[in-house]
Length: 104
Image (cartoon, rainbow, N blue to C red; front, top):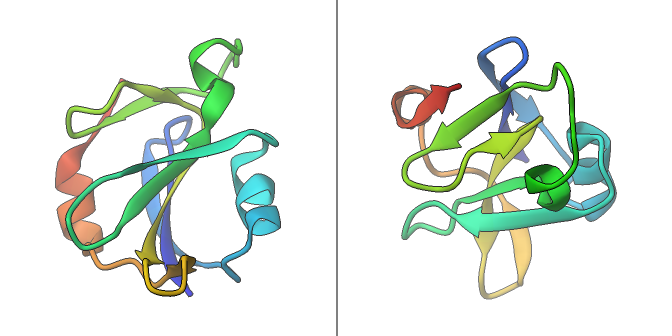
């Protein structure tokens, strides 16, 4: 499924394909404690290292999406199908997401 990876160390947002399971998110984010925040009304979610707020990650970089607290390390934006309680293709466009992300 289509998703976007936010890499604050390189200040890049790129389109990726993921299989939609938690193991894929853990692999991309690089940490086992994956949390999420909904970022709009269409079900898109930002997945991130839930412990990034307390774990020191030298060189990982930080980013802020809209008014959410700054996140350290890799973030993944993917859609969510509420009826199936499963990940889905992301709805937001890459251009729109780039306009909403600020690298710190």
